[in-house]
Image (cartoon, one colour):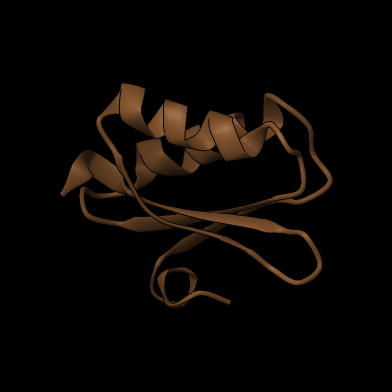
Length: 82
């Protein structure tokens, strides 16, 4: 797991398809304080484009994107762009 996931929130969206990963991320982001790191774990190929686009439109910052050996995408977003 990434350092960001160890120090912030994790949204496990593995096995879900669009728009569910974004819906779950948005739910967590609404309750999170500015500066919180939220890592989305996803298997939906669309998440690789959707998560950064959502973050950009909402004023958040993608700080890391990784793919695990088993193909899971992990995108870490800093809430509020702080």
